[in-house]
Length: 93
Image 1: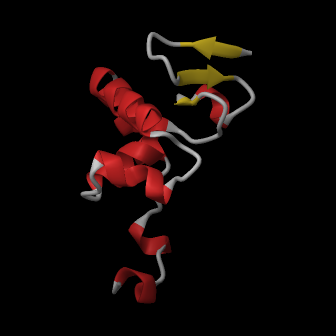
Image 2 (image 1 turned 90 degrees about the horizontal axis):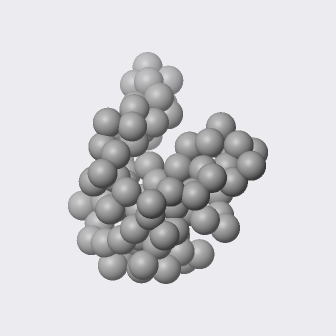
Image 3 (image 1 turned 60 degrees about the horizontal axis):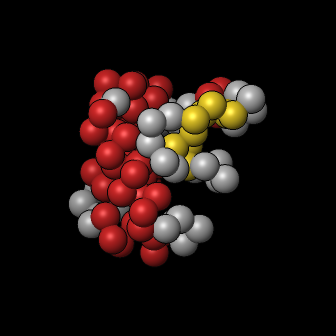
């Protein structure tokens, strides 16, 4: 079942990512946008990395994050790959 939020483009869907907040009509979680933004990408650069998203969707995801930082940070942490599982050659880049 799709649940709307107070944010225009953000929904939760029981069938997608266990109801983690996503961009409506996609499987893209809010955390994916936040992680790109944290990597110093400007908001208006994010759609070039996720071309299926509009700038309005990106801004709404960042707005959602601003209102729900603890929740989204928990999703980011729970999906983080532990350092010991990352190949040393990948870490060097």
